[in-house]
Image (cartoon, rainbow, N blue to C red; front, side):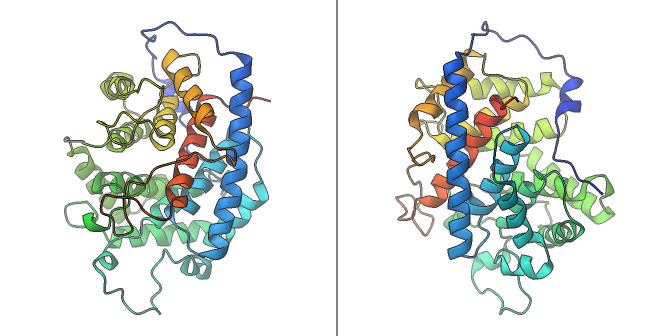
Length: 351
């Protein structure tokens, strides 16, 4: 059976998109060309950086496997040139068999001794990230679908009675694993993608409990929590009227330089928050012709590094407390993935 990547076409076909409050602006051809070049450099970075991490660390981490693989899959779907063989081979190396999944270091191996650390009780977030990424592929093999089912079983097994998943605040890794709410959003998306219309009774019950828990979170403090809540609302097919307050709130948080910041009081924009916001706004019909979107594109194009990545400042130390981590490639790779998703969603490469 062919599994197609998540499509929003049918959702948006039922919407009557309201006219934007500001007049659209013409996007200069030079800017379009710069975006195409920027995305091309980012694709090169993501492919080489993800491959290097998997070859040396041999761990399918959220920031170096799930996120870049999803960005590469979406870039390909939007008409950009990627190494499709690398993408399919990498997914095969992670999901091609149960043995491959166990070797990824993100799925618990029953042959290993129990993890005595507190985080051993929780869910390895590499699993939902990888599951979301997998559904950016045009097709999945039977073996890959079976491994995704194993991931769904692990997710459900670790779910708490109230519908949430345990989150260890002292071990948080912002922004990739920023809060219990952001982790829950990724887990819900993973369950939705894995189970689909053929979900079992237990899978439907788990997803319903998780959604109820998430929807009850009204005190959102983090920029990413607002973005992911809008993302889930889009995926659920909520009406434009229902989504509009969240859309307006995100647009109002844009900084003077055209970008967005992970931390709402911080005036410093970054590629992670800007790419994430652009991607979700593209799903609700915003295009490069909108003035605020054009400014965000210009911010990303102007701040990209020569190697195709976007520089980032750490928000955590290795133990999760505020400070500066020594290893910056995880947040840089994650930010580059979101910037790629945002730019390709706003400006597909038509051919």
